[in-house]
Image 1 (cartoon, rainbow, N blue to C red):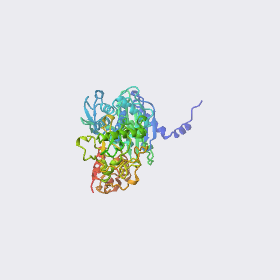
Image 2 (cartoon, rainbow, N blue to C red):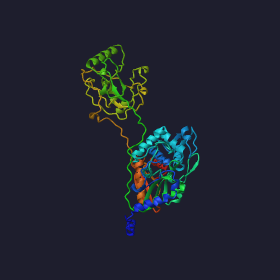
Image 3 (cartoon, rainbow, N blue to C red):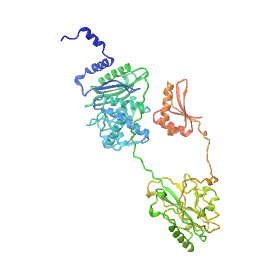
Image 4 (cartoon, rainbow, N blue to C red):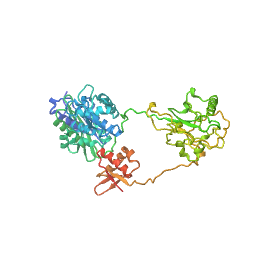
Length: 577
């Protein structure tokens, strides 16, 4: 068979696509030192604005990521800070395991405590293994638990071929990732935590116990527009690098795995980024990644609340001088009372008999039953004339000796007293009804062991006892509905001028474009919604640039917001009225 003609060969060359030429260029650059390759080679290039692939070679091959692992360690640290689990000034304890990690190291000692901000700088800039391990143990309790959290987060971010076994990237069986996944993680760091991203472009940093230099300084200084991200090296992995660079409106993120040397890895990365800038469109719609579906959080703490329900014994006959209402704590609503505590007419009759006998003996106090039985009777009459707020204070009968008043007579104040309807026909005729509901929510208590003895409300004596009316079998324990008939009760309404003291604001520096300033305002408003509250945001067009501002805050709110933003290394200044 005859070979292809010269014309056919020329036609074949003319049909070579731009992607094939790019691949050949990378392969030629790689073929020079191929004889001394330390690990399989893989590369991936993406347009960071859209996440679209530009070039890939063995991009899904599972390889050792080495210290590129620390990108996920830092992502988890940033996530914990933003969730409020830790702060930048939180001090982490260095374990003997963390202190014994091989170089690169910060030089931590077992038993030492060091702020998280210094650990982040050491892990990101110097790629310190002891710092990364300390971060993982401090956040999860142990490195294996932290590695499991890292892997779960990787899956949530779309890194489908990644599994972590440690926080620093030292070679261990089952610890792997791909060039594609590492590029995805680099893009996530840029978009999910832009307030921390500049740590990856630092040439040096103060790590608390030492000033550390960047392992990526050579590439950052040599490639125009480079601003990160992370290097990695082990003997099994070779020389790895995930890099990001911006030129004009374009941002390219690329990953190289398995380089032969620092110089060779940097040269290949430069060619990959050049090719990416050449192929990426000048204009592209920015598609930010969606928030991960997984949020690593601490176990929720169960807060138990105690419901205090007012209860009273049946009113004593006219011979009784006063009655006492006691409050008892219950962990569940009254409607769920057990059958052993069901109130029956026969039980009420027996209780009244006991009360009459006690009255004949001269005992003017009625003991509380084990469950709510009756609502307060006519003894409330004298309190109603003093205003509803006096129902929350203890009233002591003037004729009673000091020793007769229980020590727990103070009533816990209700956060929201609500009047309850009364249709208890057993109340004495001609006497006022209670003006506030005695169904109250108390402050949270942690355990049953901490519950205090049931407080009680001692009501004033009636000055003119009236024989009680006939009782009915219907027992009303309490009601959540407001009593419309008691709308005339005096209430004190405290208000303030919403504009008072709100002439302060914060300014977040200067930016070249209005869009960049507006995006910063949006991100900040979402991240600091609880602090900024209803503060108004706007971009001021000044001679020096576009200035994002939040206004309409109090001085305290402005200072608090600025402190939190400064902790994220944002330029923030409080401005007064």
